[in-house]
Every structure is written in C-alpha cells, then in structure tokens.
Length: 489
Image 1 (tube, rainbow, N blue to C red):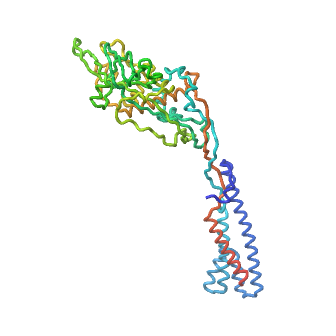
Image 2 (image 1 turned 90 degrees about the horizontal axis):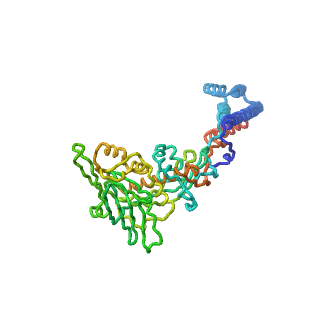
Image 3 (image 1 turned 90 degrees about the vertical axis):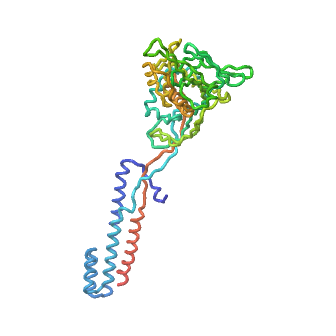
C-alpha cells in the first residue's frame, strides 16, 4: 500500500543502507529527547507553581515534588500512598506522565525507518536474434553445413551453453547483457515436425542397394536411385539428391519433400499398411560356426517424410539466467503412423535448407555392409544424434555387427518420438549455425531490441504503525495526566 512517506526514496547502495538509517534513528531519538526534556521541565514547573498557589498541605507538596524526581521516585511515592494516602490521584498522574515520556523515548527511534522494497522500470536492451525476420534475405546455400552438423553431438553435451538462446525445440532472442535483474519480453520461435510414411512404394533390391519410387499423388512421385541396406534399429536421413520429386504438367514446380528418412525399426502399423509401405531387405551373414553356410535375415525398411513448421510468439525471459519463464506451447505429437500427403509438403526455403543440411554425409565412424554389398551403409553424425534422441544406440548396434551378430529389430518407433527428435535437431542446427557466425560458415540473424521490466531494489521512508500506536497512546496519556496535575490541583 502506497503512503505519502513512501515518496521519499533512496537508491539501494552500501552508503544508503549503512549510513542514512543510523542518521534517521539518531535524529529521531535526539529530537524526542530534547522535546520531552523541555516538555517535562515546563510541566513540572507549572505543576509545582500551581500547588504553591493553591496552598496545599506540606506533606502533599513533598510527595508530589518527590514523584517528579523520576519514574522510580514516582513509583515509590505511589507505594507510600498505600499506607498514608495524601495525594493519590496527583502522584498517579505524575507517574503516568513520566511513564508516557519513557514510552515516547523508546518508540522514537522506530517511528520512521528506511525499508527496502522492489520496484520495476521499463527499459530496452539490445538482443541477438535467434530467428531471422525473413529467410528470403539469407542464402542458405553458402553455409558450411558439414561443420555445423558435425558439431551437433558435441554441443548437445554442453547444456549450460545450449541453454542460452535454445530451449528444447525453441529458439529465442538473447539479451546482450545479464548484469541487471529483469524480465525481458523477447521473440521465440518454436519448431515442430509432422512425420508420415511414404505410400505406394515400388522398389528393387540387390547388391546391398535399394532403388525406390513412391507415388505420392497422381503425377507426383518421389524416387531414389541408390540407398544402402540399413542395419536393424536405425534411423537415417537420406541426403539431398538421393530423394528427388518428379512431377508432370499438372504441377508448376516440384514441392520440397522436407526431410526424408530411412527407418529400420519396428513400427506399430497394420499388416495391410505394412505391405504398402515396407521394403524388405535381406542381410546375408556368414555362419561363424560354418563359413560355407550363409544365414539370411530380413529387415523391414520404411521411408518416412517429415515436414517442418515454425510458430513465433513473445515470451518472458529472465535476463540474468537467460531462462524462459513463459511455458512454451507444444504441438500435440502424432499418436499413430499415417500415410503422408503431398499437401503436407512445403516449398519454404529454410525447410529445404534444413533437409539438405541434415543429409550431409558426415561419417559417424560406423560402417555396415552385407556380404554382397556394393557400397557400405555409413550412418552420419546427424543420424547418430537423432537415434540417440529417440532412445537408440548406434554404437551398440555396431558392436553387434562387428561381433558377427544378426540384424534383429527390437525397438518400436512411434511418430511422436521421431517428430520431437527432428524438431529438436532442427532447432539445435539453426542455433549452432547462428552461434558460429558468417565468418565460420554459419548464419547471422542480426540484432534487435527487447522490452525489459527491470527489477530495482530501493530504500523508502516508512512509518511503523505499531510504534506509532504506542507513541500516540502515550501522548494522549501525557495530555490527560498533565492537565490533571497542572489544572486540577
């Protein structure tokens, strides 16, 4: 509650917190000491003069004058009045007057005090943008996506670093200062993904390679010329150029397919749908107990198309910790696998660029090949990062392969898990590119400003109600008792 004395404020500094409260307390105590001393002197002289003028008894004058010597003498005089009462009311009034002066003296230093309080001030601070105003102004073809994508597994192990400007699948502007205690309203972009199975699959296999064609819609198909057999329980992004859309004259241009993945995990889908979308590949592995015998294992491979979308909104950010205070609205994950529709595809430049970036073949160091392979299957660092995000372990699968094990899929992949992983890796990819800057082959989204509600701790003058009540009561008693001893006797 704001009161008139709260208008007196001081900055919260070391001097103001140590010096001025002492000065205020000492000044109040000095004022009330001088004030009560003058008041006591005048009241005492008037009371004694009044007694002499009224020609009261000598015993009465002696007892009342003795009571004025101090509070202790006044209490002693009251005790004496119990045995020989001569002027009970007058001595009681003097005692009450002196007691009230003591109360005023005690409460004087606490009537007014400086107290700390929180206030806020609106200001603006410069920020580093996490998302560009217009992707058309950015040429993503010149980025060093190889270096950027290769850094994903490393950056993900530095949570303290990643938290500045990136929260899960949300990228937000970051203030260029953290020296003030404030909440800033900044722009944040949340990336989401929607994944579906490529339909109407026709394929041919041989030599450890897959040739694939998917008829998305009449006159629109997606095809790959070559893809190596994946080992079991793997998720791989197919590089740009492997998967390409082809159209007829019904379409003005081929829509961008976004991100195309090759998945060799288990999927919870109906058998009828599986026959339409699955590509069975046969791994031939030598029997370790009989090298003349070859064991064959079939791995069901699926091709998944994931489109990306973004939503920008204003959020509240703690400037000092660079952590988001506003809950981020998340899109509902898909609960079951569905067939992708070409209308879900997008021609947005940034989404096309992300599809290109994620497909760069930066080797993870693991190489899988069947006995008849013409080319090994080498998952990239991005593939490994995505697999780790959804709960797969590429190193463990590679150990099984190197140990002469068999490709047995045991992990069931849900669309929601894959969508969350794609959205997260996309956000981290864009964030990483923005952090390294254009000089190192990355992005530069420029600077902006953010509205900041700065929290300020200040000192203000405050009247303490309880000491004020005691002081007011003591003052009323002093007036009443003073009137009694001066005018009534």
